Image 1 (spheres, rainbow, N blue to C red):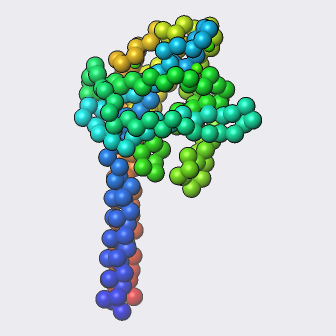
Image 2: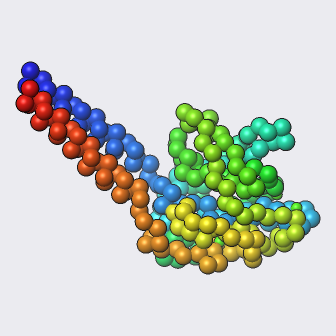
Image 3: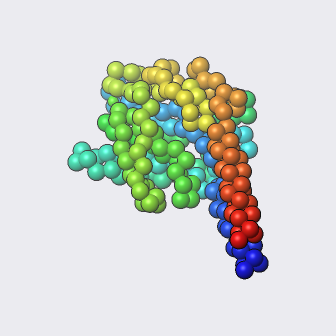
Length: 225
Ligand SMILES: [Ca+2]
Ligand SMILES: [Ca+2]
Ligand SMILES: [Ca+2]
């Protein structure tokens, strides 16, 4: 019986470690790439529409897709233009991060339109402007809701202006419309790893320690019985 319990505890530990390992299988995360600047509307016919990504120097973008998520006039949410970003040219590396621009004609002018970064069956980032929207992207078990960036363009800004992210690793606020910084660091952006605490690894460290304590506790109890 003791030997059986010992084996069960070992199997539990192996399962937990396998689950923890699989959660970090993707080569990249929001700490390596995020949507950093957008331009989708201006006075008159829209021109120079683009999405800029901030990318950690040396990060592989293989398999990463930029998705446009749109709310139709009837209220349906659709996603389209899955651009493969593996060939994106990254320039102007600053504090270990560079910038790549995707030119896209016809980015929706809101309301409730969004952009997402997808890799495999994970959504790294889902932002929107002029309201929020929800979708499961055809891959998630349940719909997720976008994060509204809180600023917007209109038919009164010029085609040389844009909305720009001021934070790091997808955490922070947006500003604009202001003169675009297409392909380089945003105006006023603090681009250092120390500007945002590494919450995800803190969580996984605490999570691992907690689970190990749980397993060892069970193991000790099973020896006593
Ligand atoms: Ca547009
Ligand atoms: Ca316009
Ligand atoms: Ca920029």
